[in-house]
Length: 119
Ligand SMILES: CC(C)(COP(=O)(O)OP(=O)(O)OC[C@H]1O[C@@H](n2cnc3c(N)ncnc32)[C@H](O)[C@@H]1OP(=O)(O)O)[C@@H](O)C(=O)NCCC(=O)NCCS
Image 1: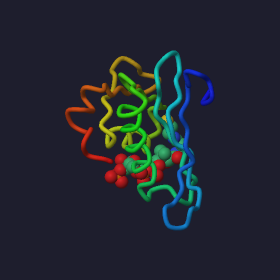
Image 2: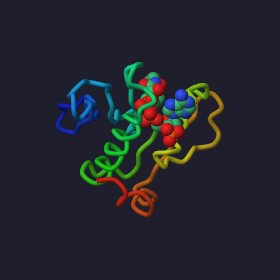
Image 3: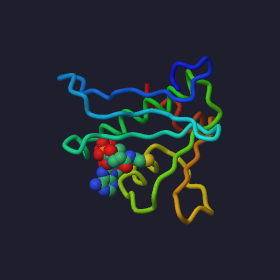
Image 4: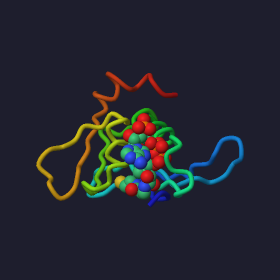
């Protein structure tokens, strides 16, 4: 998916800056034409801000360098950690999906409020 001429996934291993320890897998995966942002942080490293730090960089990379028009997200309503994370990343909840929570962030919304906040 990452090596196609037009990639449908952009994934990174997140590492701790000082030790180089691998803490998770983060990135964007396109489903039905919609690039979805997501992360998995290994259990002992959760709650330390790694997912937010990594996904804020990926969100900005997606708009600045990958040229995405919008980014999306999706998770189960019971995944409270991920829901808090998506809010903190500035995504808007899309109504009308009771079984899954869907998220959307347009390039315009990002550029207005978030584009200059993270390098
Ligand atoms: C969801 C997940 C990626 C969060 O990773 P993390 O590194 O622990 O998250 P962070 O420490 O960066 O926290 C970012 C925000 O997430 C939310 N969050 C994190 N842990 C939380 C918890 N235990 N309860 C509620 N919200 C939580 C908060 O909004 C938090 O911001 P805050 O610290 O300012 O309150 C991690 O729990 C995970 O890997 N879960 C399993 C995989 C998964 O569910 N991925 C998402 C599927 S779409």
